[in-house]
Image 1: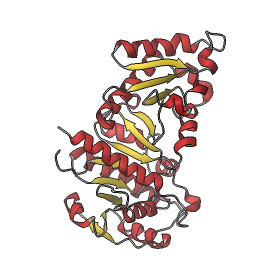
Image 2 (image 1 turned 90 degrees about the horizontal axis):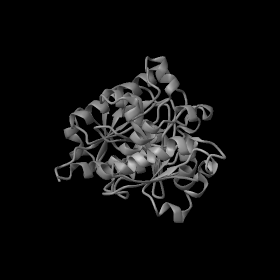
Image 3 (image 1 turned 30 degrees about the vertical axis):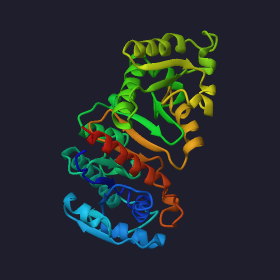
Image 4 (image 1 turned 180 degrees about the vertical axis):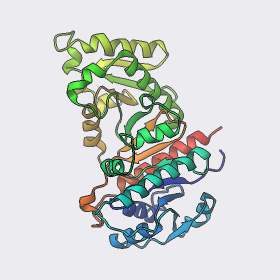
Length: 335
């Protein structure tokens, strides 16, 4: 395996919990056996956030990623983009610009090979929109930079107990049946299967495909979508050599015995996927973007402005996102 470049962790919105959680993750990096990482953002903000959290974290500004390996053992390296004041819980346009600059810079570093994976801190989408961010979220931005269309950037939530892929994401429940097509389900599930093999080391991934309706439609008595759309998509996946099965009644897919039979659950809409995920792995769930030429993970929470700077934000999701990014990076580096 070739030597790995460090992981790039974006600061997110500097008024949110991202800066303090980056510092807290570094403080636990030895105990958690994390690969070396660096923060893209503001050294001043990270240093002050650590102090406010009550932890001792030496921060060192770096100019290139080549410096990270030598500095990481003794200090948290920060690629310093702006000397902003730390104002937890008080987001502003300057902070949004820093978040956007950090995201763009870090994505470029990973694409160039100067960093081995991208871990994105939480942002405030409404604030970013005020400074010209014309994307629904970070996923779409990263996909666009990488030359990937949004429909080929697939969200997976992964934790110790469960992996889920929602076919439709941030749309109303009313619109889901009209958005589902055989090709959408087939293509997103196929992207998930390829990523599970490449980045998660699962040679022959098993995909459990949820039905849309209660009881997976019960032969059309509770809706026709499962027979007309979901079942043909599963058949197409199986014809392509992917071990997919379903449509399954969603209410019986997520108990312990059922989860042993698959590596990822393909779900039809946001809450069908995320409710069981967060019930089982709330503190360890990681948002992974599949289908990209680079590795991108993110902790599965928002900016939490209301508790930023109070020291109460849990570091577990950030550690899980850094760990998963490192594990995927190591697998991609294998010959």
